[in-house]
Image 1 (cartoon, helix red, strand yellow):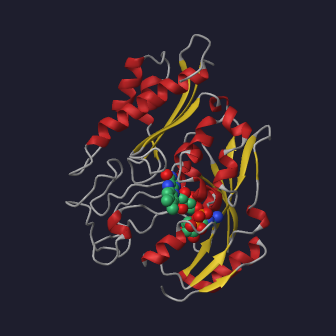
Image 2: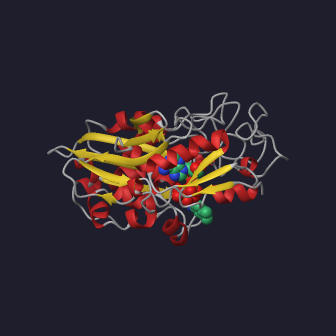
Image 3: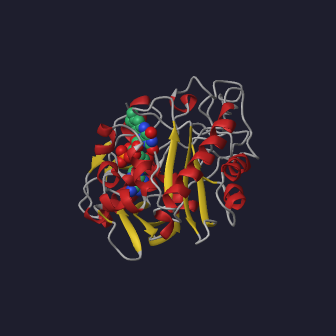
Length: 338
Ligand SMILES: Cc1cc2nc3c(=O)[nH]c(=O)nc-3n(C[C@H](O)[C@H](O)[C@H](O)COP(=O)(O)OP(=O)(O)OC[C@H]3O[C@@H](n4cnc5c(N)ncnc54)[C@H](O)[C@@H]3O)c2cc1C
């Protein structure tokens, strides 16, 4: 491993200054469950590591406010997943964290770090033996024509088909979450939907944060669709594994049982957290019958471009969407769901 400097600032302003001092090779360190992993693999080789794990400005979370839920970027995945308000009123948010990683990882990992974890593509993590435009811009994509079972079918480009691996960002996308950022140029707020970039011809540019800019907190407007929400995740192993296909749905029904509002976001199948607007359009205005849910699932994958080994994700993903829609509708109607 390449030697690196380590600093543990006491305040957000000091952390941003330390990142600026460290230059382009500096990286913030939160729980370390992703960054240290990539450093050991030689994929990341920061010259400076700035520990943001103890910053008071990033700590804690509040789900009791009347207008928004607020999550400090440094709150642990485990603490947020277990929050009683979230589990009752925004089950999709709690489930996305509870179904992510293992209990040990969730205890260490933060909700901010979860958003910015990098892909699990084996060619990306495998080192210089493989072409990977995320690691070496312009070097190609070994997954094309290679082993791409876990890769994306939506939002891919010729340069990269790596899937975005996180669960939490997918659920947040169904709730129009916003992110408060702080960096060398001060504070700003962006929509979570604008954080992650698709690969296009520059897959190494994965997000829209500026150099040395940190996610400080995540804000979610309170929404009646919270109770009618679900995070449905299918993976190779139920104990812990990344999603092969997942769907976050948040919806409300009108007094006649028709879908009034609906958000659908997909994970495991796309290069970034993926909003499935075609699926939303397919169900809004009508009752959420089995047929409507199946149609919506198919609509979500109409533009899919599978590779050699992941065509199964198109059918699987469509079924995941259909199941999530039906579960969310049951929850919105106040009926028990098995
Ligand atoms: C065995 C295993 C299984 C896993 N399974 C899943 C799963 O099923 N679903 C899932 O979603 N995740 C899964 N993960 C990933 C895990 O959730 C992430 O590693 C974790 O959330 C990252 O959080 P962290 O605080 O440890 O981040 P770190 O490792 O400290 O940082 C991750 C990245 O984010 C950057 N960063 C961190 N915080 C900030 C911030 N506030 N502002 C700007 N940049 C920041 C870091 O510089 C780094 O690039 C798994 C991990 C392991 C090891």
